[in-house]
Amino acid sequence: MIARRSQLPLKTFLNTILLAGLLAGGACSRAKKPAENIVELTPNPRLRSDSEQLQTAVAKEAKAAEEREQAEQLKQSPAPSPPQP
Image 1 (cartoon, rainbow, N blue to C red):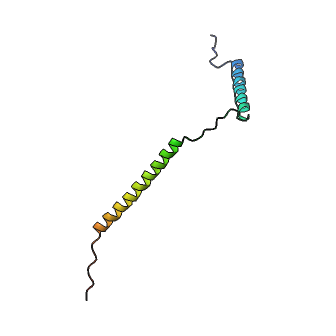
Image 2 (tube, rainbow, N blue to C red; image 1 turned 90 degrees about the horizontal axis):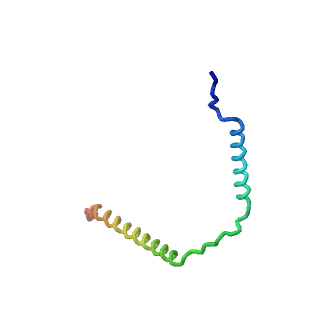
Image 3 (cartoon, rainbow, N blue to C red; image 1 turned 90 degrees about the vertical axis):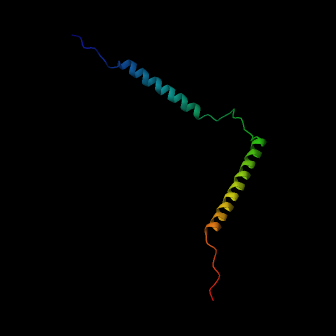
């Protein structure tokens, strides 16, 4: 009986390693180049105003929640009794 080789042939394995090395080397050489065509993004003024409006609304809601919490605490605490003579 002839034994079948279930392993990958050495030539194919070495070619795969070589190809992976070339691809990795090519990717690294590209990463070292300075970026030439980077577009500077300027913030959209409308988005900035939306952000400011959102921050204002959140601050107002936080203040209102704090006031509600203080009012709730005042309702829960008993009123101080007048001093006894």
